[in-house]
Image 1 (cartoon, rainbow, N blue to C red):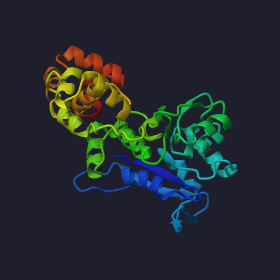
Image 2 (image 1 turned 30 degrees about the horizontal axis):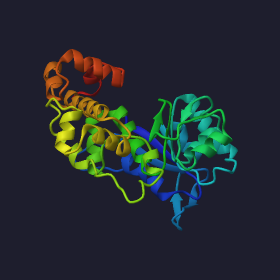
Image 3 (image 1 turned 90 degrees about the vertical axis):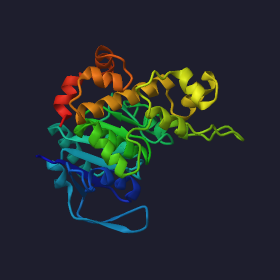
Length: 315
């Protein structure tokens, strides 16, 4: 089986955490989980690359490593106000032209913008840098709220931990939801975080912090087969429906109904991948009532049918 080749481009001074986001998702072998990615780090020139952590990182591959990459990750660019080396820009443009997927984490979007690859396209970066990206590259449609933007050939993420969200999202698309969930479980991470990044951009109102939704979300995730709705969730949480809706908006950036639907779709994906259950049975188990409703919701969310998804990702 062809292993998807991921190459991360190290740029001095390299952020160790943002590089580690990609390495942890794509480059770690995990017990009991087949390795479906090959991970390599390259630099403009092989040799020591300074990092933000105060040590140099030895990189053995040069830009030629990008020529055979299926995915190229740019784990941050710490000097966004400076011009990028022409050799680096040229390598990225050539890779994109031949069909490689380009992925930026946090400030890496500035490098893609310098290469002209984000013109008239939607992208994101860390909320603190979004206004600067929009001002310096007015052709780029900057979305300052989302955790990531995936356009298929190019994907960009918000700051730091949102790089993990994007990498897990890409694994979900490449290998299926069940495989991505196993990777996330090994990392002790949620397979998918809801909401946008602006919920982290400003502190909560002084003197008041919203109660965590985590216990309620865990409770609901175990009862997707039940007829859960906003009122049922509010009763379990011991608050009014209006208060609960506000907490969902504050903490997750989505409505309770949208969150529930996303959990049900994800549960249906896992059952399609891991079982031979009929679609009607799966629909009942995940709380979508009927095969017709599941197909409609599934197509709206994923632009495919349950049958096609099972053919692509089933055992």
